[in-house]
Image (cartoon, rainbow, N blue to C red):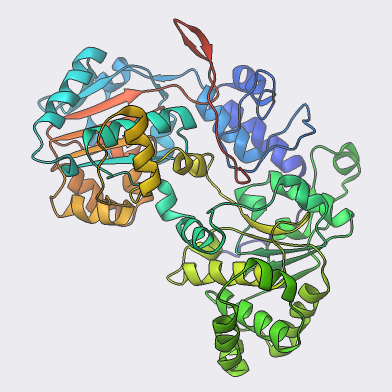
Length: 522
């Protein structure tokens, strides 16, 4: 049996720079991609990095991008094309055996393609013919609800708004989004508890926080630009606690490529004061214990609770009824350690709770988010500097798409506004989300599937079942920049439509345009 070496080096540093260079070389875009790297997250003539949704600091730097972002930029800026010649050389059956890596490296999609079953190949089709085919197939449906319109967080705000408007004018709310599979509990519970399903902090709040509780996230892997802010907060005296079943190396040591002293002298920044290695799925139990101790020892903010909250008494009663034996069993942390953590919360004048999908991707994801929010409300940590809720979205514009109306359960106010402005009736029935849409597709209830970006079959549960179900539809439409697995399981009619990426200039007959996104902190 081969022994796997333990990674003991700091996150980022020279290995990240070397890996980033290798990615640019791998996609054969060293010069073009390298130039684009310098424009990432820049306010003048730049673009928001497609890698993740971590916000930009107001004091912009010459280089403000991480290894993950450079990989995505390299992928978007490669000049190699998956054009008609490429599809002439490869049948769809052959391409089904390729890995996702191989498909992506086949090049940028460059012209509309239609699947020819007789040849088992994609062949070029004029844009006008593609649009006519889509209109014809949509017009033949018995109901607009027989079509599913999926969206990825790579879609920027403006096309997202137009996409949802098109779908609703067509007559359905079947608008599943990749957010169904990541921060859905965040959006639902924060909306119920705070009135908005988003962060209550700005990036500058991290500079004023005295305590940061990080739940279920690994910034070094998923949003590395957060590491610099955490390191800076720690230098300012903020105490940072990671609550995670895994002890992430990137939170213990971070070598900042932006600091010459780090790179030249091999220095690294410490960020985490302690790691609470919680039992998987035990977050709500841990938070219950913290809240229970705070209430029973009168360490809560009574003025804030009285002025700004409701439902305190039922919560207090429920917490009083919870036994410490059940709490410690549920989270795997001793009562002493829970109380120690509760004392830190009690002593902090400014606390931020930040979390990733380690909190949301559970059966009890709603409860996890609810208890984080309850803790912040108990301590009055909403609406003050250096404190609040900070869900960290991993995808680049999944939050912005929701703001633009991509939602299978739209609010009445949104539908009323759309009807008033566009003078067109909007569908009132809720539509399919990712999971119910997949079930409907597999059950044969859907005749048209459209993916606005993304890789639906791979991202959603039960990939093979979805791939097979896609072959039973009357029409599949895939809008994207690169080939992926979902595009290779054609129905009776199948279209691949290329599009621009966020890293590219958008030039129309009216001049150069711009696109916007919404980051994790709005």
